[in-house]
Length: 368
Image 1 (cartoon, one colour):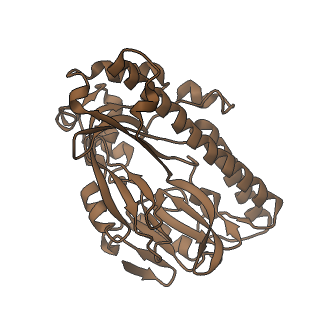
Image 2 (cartoon, rainbow, N blue to C red):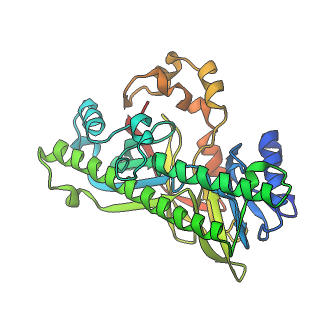
């Protein structure tokens, strides 16, 4: 743990934090309603208003941009009784079956305003569906997605509302994306209401997609549906863009985690790597200083634009060797080299979580 200043501590050595991210950390830590300190995770990188990989506890106000625009984004994993030998040698059929059952890309699903039309769709970018093997060759289904276009619209609406209020009340901010809503106001209550709806939608969206993945596994193994229940031994869900009321240091406060998971003592969580690297099932250690928080993944090393200039399809073929994946130049910016080393992130998180299972993917599904 490293002290950046009186109101910011980090689990990443300060010299390893990119300058733009450090500026964001210092700015958000200076806000008058920060409770105790912000906690910066080892996977931190620049985001909107606040770094991705941050735990931001607040008392009396909330910063919509500090929650993020993909409200409720997170992970779900299901442990099955299957082993690698129970699956076909050629995994293309599983990948294509998942791609048929689940709408993948942003596009038309994000343009629809209703949540119902987006429920059960994956999205693009770093969202994925995987079939993975743990350290004992046990088969898991693993999925990353959020509240889709409807969550983004909700977030942007309330960010703009907060910015209008700051302008109207002549409140000067170190960054306009740190515009906030004060507790006890109508605008605050409306945001919390919509935030909770979007978080619930994101969880249900993952549940719906995972149920479809389990149906595909049922058809793969048994040749028919209806065996989903016997194929599910354990299900783990966790948000990593969310806000909720929690009690810390003897007081109930709002805790916003932007690119971070809750890691209470004994709580199960999921920390994915990138395409072609390991992912982890973890158990929280309940770090008091971190407000019971842990990282949400590897964290970007290069922006999408930088990654597209740096990597080629030769890199894709090398990194994804042995993994059933749709070969597409659209995924270049998601290759392992675009992200921080997940093993380093996990080592720097040893005071926050303990590793329970280590995943290696054998099927990867993404949206363009």
